[in-house]
Length: 201
Image 1: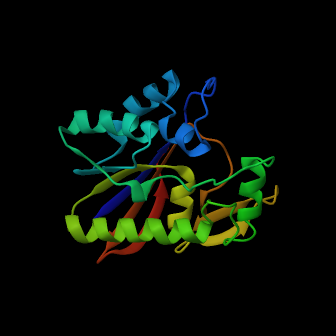
Image 2: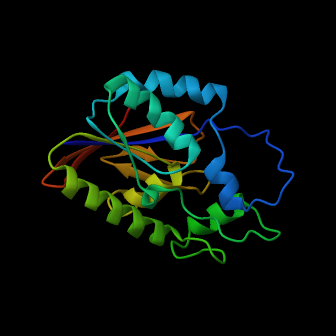
């Protein structure tokens, strides 16, 4: 069976909040940009799955809806597939958090989530999904950091020339810090064990 992990990174940036939503509320509710919607339309022909799962983030669901419509399938929502929690930023920023977490997989801000915690949560969620759906191809619409957390357990770890964490499989870089419009990772599995990992462009 094949597992697809999809992250649509094209979200609206020019939002101004006049009320006091938390960082997590802003991230959960942030919609796709127009470019993100176009990416979501294009990806449907790149995937061959008959079970759809999504985090409860607006951007993930907005991406999943196009594939669901294309295949006439329902979307299963699972908050265990949500993005890694930032926690209380204070006067710090997300870029600094990412840098620290890539060197210490247990590092986190107050009320946040470490990479190891994200790894455990994502693995619990995906293992439960695999047991539930059996030998069917699955697509999960989630987030780049959540995908990083999931794959942290299985792929080779290293650092690029900018000293950022990369994850590789058979010398192919699967996860890095390069900003892409959309990430589609194809994982072939046998008896719920990974046998191949590739990137779909």
